[in-house]
Structure formats: structure tokens, C-alpha cells
Amino acid sequence: MLDCHCHLLDITNFSSDTFLLSINKCHVERIYCNSVEMSQWSLLSTFSKQQSQIIPFFGLHPWHLDSSSFDALSRLVEFLSKPFTSCGEIGLDRHCDTDFSLQKEIFIRQLEIAKDTKSFVAIHCVKAWGPLLEILTDYQNDISFMIHSFNGSYEVMERIVTMGGMISFSDRILQNNQRKLQEVLKKTPLENLLLESDFPFQSTLIGSSPKIYCQLLTDLYTFVARLRGISFTDLIQILSKNGSICTY
Image (cartoon, rainbow, N blue to C red; front, side):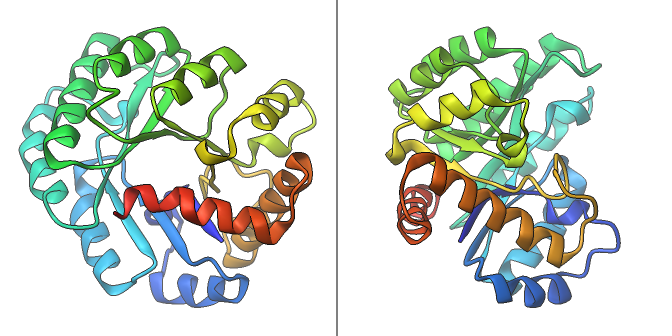
């Protein structure tokens, strides 16, 4: 299986060797491991060099921005200039306390860096679809990107797909109160579909153990395969091909 978005460095008492050894039993072949602030970048870089299944994503999350974030951008160029790296998690969030004009400025600066370094981008969006789509329109021919833990409408999904973007669904889709989102997933083109754990956040299960992680990802794949009317094995193959977009 492929996990297209998670935050392994945010697991309490995280031990990379122990965790990855344990999840090998549930056949997770590649993991897109995201960062949220500069303090995580060096550790993530080292971690990914030691563990071949980890694809590192370096970025500044809108929750963690302040005036000092501008100073981190030159370091971001440094990390994204290395091979097999991606940009994330970055984006816009109207539900957090960070000044929205600062969010937009830092987001655009990071998209520019991703464009210059030819980096795939993992994007966070909460209650800011209008500004996000407006900004992405200017970059649709210049970057490859995914919207992580998608929670938008069918119309938003269509706009993103038209731009060539990938739509990644988290285990939020498993909840009974997400019928509308499930309908969006059913209509998302398979060639634009990704799945993610967003572990250890947004989990429908309690805990952050390797066992919980494997159960979460397996439940998600099983549910989506059934929803789309395809086999578990076929879904794995489709997502593996889709996920290669950030490792070319």
C-alpha cells in the first residue's frame, strides 16, 4: 500500500526503526512523510536517507507561521534542491489564528520555490477554497500537486482535477456523517485519486501505535475499493501508479 500523507515525526515517543519494522507486516511500501516547520527538516532528511520507503516533504504549515517564517524560505530551497524530495505540508487555513495575508504570502513563496525546484506539493486547505483555487490557477502549468485530506465539494474537486491536481482522501471518509464526501470520492477520476492516513491526526481510531496505523490504512483501502467497485489489489496498483508522480 501507499500512504500519501502522514506526520510520523509527530508521533509521541516515535522510534523510526521500531515503527517501520512493525508496519512492514501490513505491506506499506511507500510513505509520504510531511513536516510542518523548519525545526523538523533536518531530522526528516536524515530519517528518509535511512529508510527507503520514506518520501520526505519539507514545508511551512499555515498553523506554524510567523514573521520569522520568511527566514526559513532559503533553507527550504536547500532541502527541496535535493533529489527525491517534495514540498509540504503548505497551504491556507481560515480556521486557524495565523494572519491570512501572511498565510497567502508564505504559501505563494513556497509555490515559487516548488516551481523552481520542480517539487511535488502537498497542500492543506480549510475554508479557503476560493483563494486557493485563484492562486493555483496561476501555477497549474508549473507545479504538480495534491490536496491532502480533501473535504471539498464536487465542484472544487472538478476544478482541481482540471488543473491536473491529485485528490487525496483520509480516513475522514469512513465516518457515517461524510455521505457527501463519499459521493465526491465515487466521482473522482481514478487517475487523480490518492489515499492517506494523515497519521497520527484525524484518525477514526484511538492511539498512535503501528497496529493502529496498519488497521487505519487497511480499513481505508478496503472501504474505498468497495465504494469504487474494484478489487483491493487493483486499487493498490492504481494508487501506486498515481503516487509515482512525486518520485519521478
